[in-house]
Length: 52
Image (cartoon, rainbow, N blue to C red):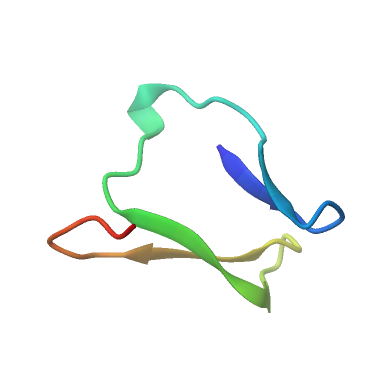
């Protein structure tokens, strides 16, 4: 799973998840929004085409 590292100000590979956990949608986060786990809010964007 790719995570954003705020100290490095860059994305890093945090872990490799099994294919069963793949996300068949556009997945990301909303910067500067914090969830209960102190991570940015996750988002799922449902579209008919993948986003770049």
